Image 1: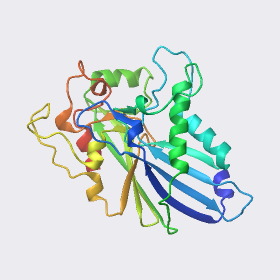
Image 2: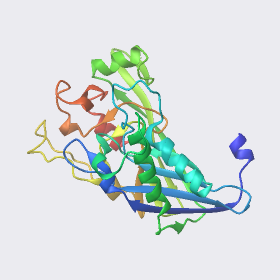
Image 3: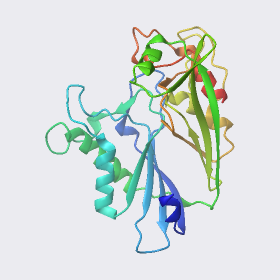
Length: 280
């Protein structure tokens, strides 16, 4: 309500820049969105600060698992650097980040201590965002629709994590089945940009293409869905991951491997989560 009551007139711009050298995909097939995207709101009132919404699919994992610090990782330093340099307020949104982390060889840590890599990556990404030169003004158009989805959970480790409060997914009993209740969404901005709103960490190839072939897949079956970017009737499609929910990893059905050999499978609620979310 506070945000609604303080709305201001202004212009919304969209632009992006290549940041692929800062991104590393740990899981084949190697597919990811190499851009960092920015929505920049320029208020008509010159006394008000700009607002930037930035999106990139890069896990916040610059801290070692042995560190005891609580941190918002590199997005904090991205935000602080931009704020100090431009005065803009920044919101960072994760994209399709399944097994995507940072390419640490291509940025320099800043300072010393556990936060040096987070600060280095945040500043490197901030400089990228500040250098965006291809932005376009968006028409004052906002379309959005949400859709509830139920998924039959068949991963006992995931169910246990929810039951013990490690994950806060909504789970309900449907007769003898355990159902994860979540939602997906789609938003269009300015007739140019579409945003797939995904309630977890989705495999980038589901969005951009390149899902493992039948011959090379774990289950020796095919993935019979077109990439989301090809089905969205929009000039540019991006992804807001972890939107309104975190149901875990969202993998193509044909490439869900053994949970004893792969990290992502441990936290996939269903072997059919990919097709269910994609269909929805």
